Image 1 (tube, one colour):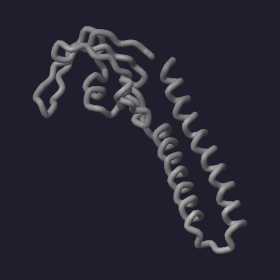
Image 2 (image 1 turned 90 degrees about the horizontal axis):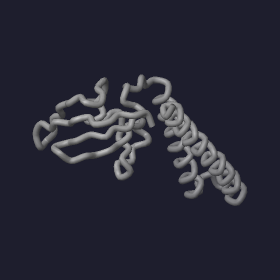
Image 3 (image 1 turned 90 degrees about the vertical axis):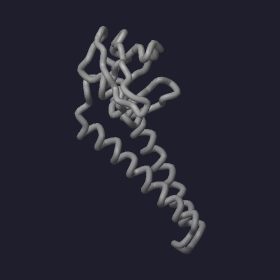
Image 4 (image 1 turned 180 degrees about the horizontal axis):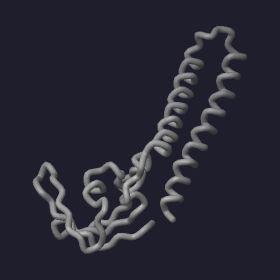
Length: 141
């Protein structure tokens, strides 16, 4: 069920970006009316911002179309790493927020957990050496 919501969150982000583009379009029209020259610094800044937002939308759409998401996507994990208990949710790379426990499907820990379930142990190579992760709980978010 959470997988659909995560997809919906990505689609909502796309809609938000489209609204921002519409707003910039209005600002561009206003700038062109107020300034006769097409070399207005404000105009160039707005056009650059519009291009950036359009590229962001393209990236989000491509990620929805072309990415086969791993089994970990949309899962909430409670794990023990070297005796320390941690909880996190595995989300699309565009939704990462490590301070709130959202990690990417592409992160090393999510890749290590893919295909495993509660009670399993997985090993993860880190710069500090091999870490053993015990999966305590797995639930759909």
